Length: 403
Ligand SMILES: Cc1cc2nc3c(=O)[nH]c(=O)nc-3n(C[C@H](O)[C@H](O)[C@H](O)COP(=O)(O)OP(=O)(O)OC[C@H]3O[C@@H](n4cnc5c(N)ncnc54)[C@H](O)[C@@H]3O)c2cc1C
Image (cartoon, rainbow, N blue to C red; front, side, top):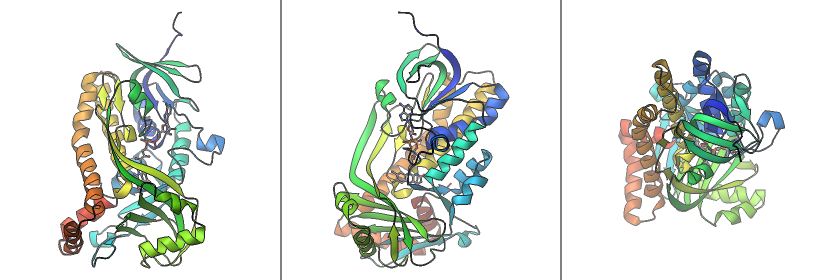
């Protein structure tokens, strides 16, 4: 049977979640300068169009957005709107249950107004998708990639909406469980943490004053991030399976359990919104580039959220890819050329390795219940209070506000 005629595109982005949508937004200047043909394929309906209450990337979570990420969004022309529903992080408080000492870091110590911002994912999605409707992009949404076949000049993609694309560069931004990566034979290293992150928004009895808390407990870390008003975003890590009993509790019992685990430092927990659970694994793709192919975001690296780094790291990947493509296009090169993608990988590798190691190390350091380590951790936290630059570096990184 003759193959359906394919529509040529320079770049096909598979996944219009946080990372795919950010990449499409960041490509705007190159689209204008080089007349690039860009297609985005997203499986879930767009938030604005469908009034969908939920979309996999833009769900009930909120993300700690580092200053560098805010700058990247500003360059895309979306930060001014994003920040309308964001809360600044003015101070960070890291502590460990049962141990004296806490590490504190305030933005004004560093002469800054904020260490970062917390933005609800659903709002980020809305703002990004609205921006994308202003760009000359081909949106295939809702649609999935049903088949992907490598060709000498890129990939041929067959979509569930009946379209067929011949893409010079295909970017896989289809998330941690990327089915396409597997279909292309790109292996991943997966280390389950045997932990589950339980997320919910909670209302607190007193103003949080922009404080972000990270509290390490025997059962797992608890992060509380400031949201506008007296709301905070909770990420409570549990041993896999234990989250089920917390999901089943009544709101009142859940709040009481949280209060016992977290203490009173943020005031009394008054209300809780819907609760969701995310099983946690470290997943890293063994290959992130091939001729005509780049892997970005969770498809390349799904990290433990303890350090709030995953999306910030991915956004730096978006910037590096766009800059590398800009240089290649200016020199007359093709987006999917292996040399272009190798240049991208050379820029990316060290940051990705360092952040992956840092996040994973933090989970292991604070997750192991061992008397000796426990003392080392406590000494570390107390010691960090004395050692300014180290403490600052750790606290900023631990809350995802570094860079
Ligand atoms: C509890 C929790 C808290 C977190 N907090 C932070 C934080 O504070 N700061 C931070 O930087 N990071 C944080 N992260 C990490 C962050 O959420 C991820 O880095 C981010 O979601 C990755 O986005 P993504 O677009 O790569 O993948 P995803 O969010 O998984 O999006 C993938 C998209 O691809 C679409 N898709 C999938 N398959 C197909 C297909 N075949 N065809 C078309 N479309 C497809 C999906 O519908 C989806 O929209 C957190 C993660 C968790 C679990």
